[in-house]
Image (cartoon, rainbow, N blue to C red; front, side):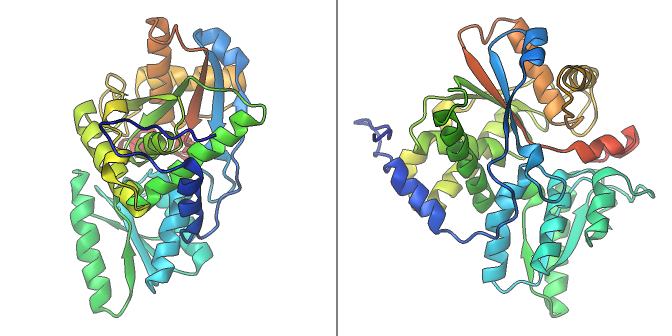
Length: 352
């Protein structure tokens, strides 16, 4: 059955089978153990109320301590190898899941890795920073608490490496690159297959929104595969309006990688990003997030990331209590991983 959506006002989306064939034709460097599990969480759903609830466990991807950033890295590392690169360069905060996963991917690919972190060296290796160094990453710090300082430093570093004879491949801060977005498009197809073979048929997908690549991939995948799912994202990084612009741009660029007509891949009418869960700032644990983390752990034995998934789940619980999901029969929460951040002090979490 062709599930592609068409309208007189917009170009037709290619048949889902054609989209999947294009994705399959793109080079990938295998890292993840797929599919990630899909778990019902009935005790948690009973505590929170609202729809039947499932967790898509991308924290259990089986590589580099897990996390959904691994999905995008399969495409990005393949691109780096095709380009003849010998060094991966990326960055974020010291408790970045993306940087830790990239360091692990570089190790497996036989490449060097340089991680650029904002702020100053905390002086102790904890959580994701410890793992990134364990995987072999060289850590550099900008000395500037501004997150954007990473972007400037990455480009400067790449230029220095080229001058020294290295062949760096730059991955943007947080892994927010069009090829990385395609990893999450494949996650949509994966969940669709799980739904078709005994899993839930979700009305609602819930996830945290940081750099925007994950949400862009889920919205783009749902559009391209003609699925009826609605997605709600909770921004843990920046104001919702700014996040919407980033998500829209990333989805358009990822669609171009698949050679799909831009009019057929516009997801602007489906972007639903909600504020109110960031708390004191990005990377800083919040009281509501801590409460959500404890609730999930004590009801289901599942650990959330203290500043990403915990905050997003707090937002979901808030909206369930407000009756915003009363019409949804089944919801899937995308657990994007990040448990290593639990093993950093609160001060460490504030830096990333």
